[in-house]
Image (cartoon, rainbow, N blue to C red):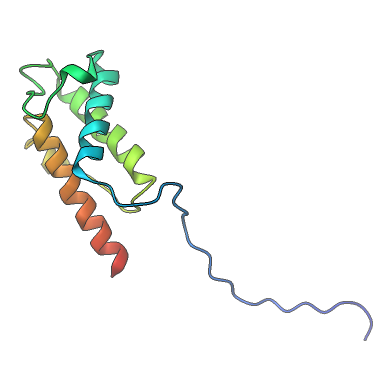
Length: 116
């Protein structure tokens, strides 16, 4: 037999590689939420604090809240496969702190799912 024989061996490749290392903390999530709110609403992120009310103080409507959730999922999804914020969580988002808490809870669920 002449020629080259090849043998196809299964190779395990991760579905996604993470470009950012390390754990994501509450401070990181708060910074991302504030930056995204600033971009979406044209507000100064430095003027947005944990107790800032999304609808009352920032005049965010339902579409802005959805935009916020999608932007946070997109940014943090690069670091945590499986991050998803449920539509049911949107009603709970009153303050920036609420948004941070929901994201942290979902990140914990996504990380728990990664180790399963």
